[in-house]
Length: 421
Ligand SMILES: Nc1ncnc2c1ncn2[C@@H]1O[C@H](COP(=O)(O)OP(=O)(O)OP(=O)(O)O)[C@@H](O)[C@H]1O
Ligand code: SF4
Ligand SMILES: [Mg+2]
Image (cartoon, rainbow, N blue to C red; front, side, top):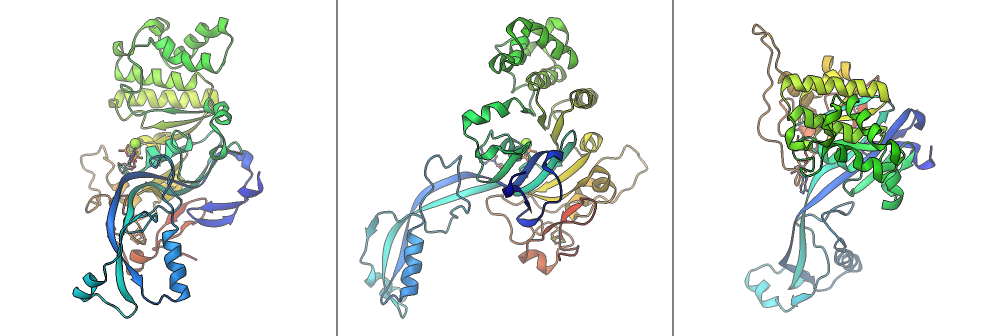
């Protein structure tokens, strides 16, 4: 274990690590992914101090020294993004003598007699993943649940470095993959795979199935050339696909069969860790069951570790060993599957569980209907991010963010209803 790894960071809280890295295939520390959604230059009026004291001059200089983010802003964002109201770069001054204007408008203050106009850079970021920390044990399935737009897919893709992240660290088998250059990352690509949500959109329509499954096998030299065809057919059989599908094209298959092709493609490069991003949400219930059972069988046979993303709680309950509940880019609760489903702590988890349909016409459950929409991740609420929709909201919740704490047996929760010390 590296020295850097020793202080364990859980949603910004540093605690002492008490476990060996070998137990964990994946460790994620304070991961952030911000998307730049708007970038525009604005003309604003800024006051010029008449007799600036040294402290205020220093503050002005500090404000004007904030540099805009260089390069591709949609990919790399600063640790603390420049918000809508922030004065960013010291861009060219457009005009300087605005004293008369300020006097007319009665804005003159004791130490301000002039205003000047400046162009500022105005940026808005969507904080899709906003500081998540967790670990995944070798061979387990960590289920991730949460409403649409809470950042599940972004987190999964950021872990695999399909997105460049805005902050944090990801360790795969003890190697910090977030610090690796693309060439060094290449060798980890085969070990970390993803199965996408949409079996229709994620297969190239003009390639036959054998080629789709076998392409990465060839590129990464998984088996000698002479064994290539047999190897691909063997993987296809494992995933419930018949040999003669090898030369067929994706449009000739049903949704369930296509998802099996996607699974075979991910497994063909012998991964250790697979992100399953809603792999069954596009399938009907009976096919869902087949694909879930297939994933479980393959996990047992090939000793795979899954990060299983879904908004279907019954599917997550069926497949997961542990479950994490996300809200607005952060975890609000995480723990063993049994603890989450039998003894939920967070009001948001209660609401999600109350919405799971029960196949009993006489069942009269207390459905908790959440008020309003999920707030914008570009401008999340202060304090507890859930306070705008929580029926148990207290005054403290509006101002102070609750700590994500372990309340025993690894059952973590972020809520002021529970002790914070
Ligand atoms: N490329 C992008 N540019 C800007 N915003 C984005 C981008 N991709 C995702 N987002 C935003 O990030 C937030 C999280 O999106 P994400 O796809 O991770 O949600 P999700 O939890 O997977 O939702 P779903 O259950 O619907 O798949 C959303 O508000 C989304 O609008
Ligand atoms: S911290 Fe407060 S607002 Fe947030 S979930 Fe708990 S009770 Fe509700
Ligand atoms: Mg998604």
